[in-house]
Amino acid sequence: MAYKEKEIEKLYYTIGEVADMLKVNASLLRYWEKEFDTLKPKKNAKGDRFFTKGDIEKIKLIHYLVREKGYTLDGAKTQLKSKYAETEKKFLLIEKLQRVKSFLLELKEQL
Image (cartoon, rainbow, N blue to C red; front, side):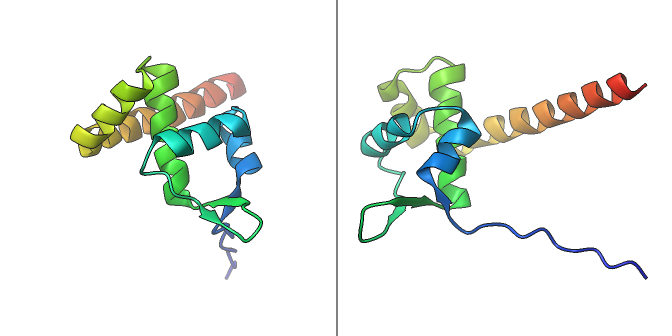
């Protein structure tokens, strides 16, 4: 019987890793941390930030609203405060559709 190894996931990501994931500067993430109350990464004694998967999902949602939908920071804050569940649901749906699209494009290239 074949043994399937479980993928090991990190509990915490550095600000550089998160910036690379989203293709933004670390300074932008620090700025968003100041602007959005919901972003509270863990910090060590030196002040280095460590982001959880939940923090990264919040950052992706902010990135979606500000960079892709064109919201101002105040508009994004208002949207997240008043309609967080609805906005998150739409964002997750779009994210899944983009993964399906990239899978289908890869499949098309292989044919």
